[in-house]
Length: 134
Image 1 (tube, rainbow, N blue to C red):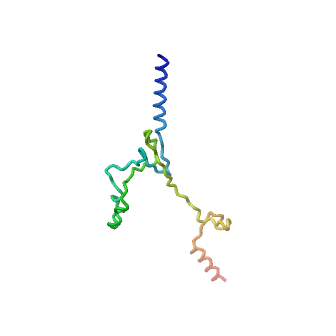
Image 2 (tube, one colour):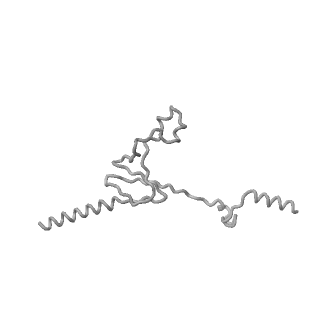
Image 3 (cartoon, rainbow, N blue to C red):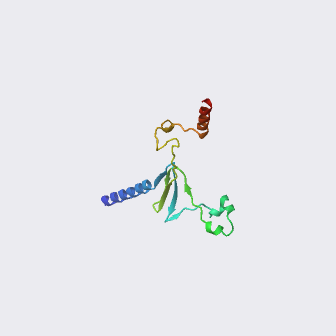
């Protein structure tokens, strides 16, 4: 009897621990997330649609039905957040990639090896200055 009680308590503790630990999640700074319940995205309370946004004011009346979608709750960076076992979290990266404008791939030594970018006005002034000094 003690073995059955001990196994039951152990199973209960294992289930609760697994329930709470697998339910925790975070959202990174370069991500946004949407929680789904049984495959359906969690909607914004009040039944708002995309037509409730100010940007929809410029749509013509015949275009309005085509762009009528429910607004979903977007989870901002942070956490830890909690989800139930039947919920899924879909994360999307919103990271942007920067490019060094001073780097010249054809001539790596140009622009002080990609550390300085000169404007076309400065280059033009130098050329004009050289031609007048001669």
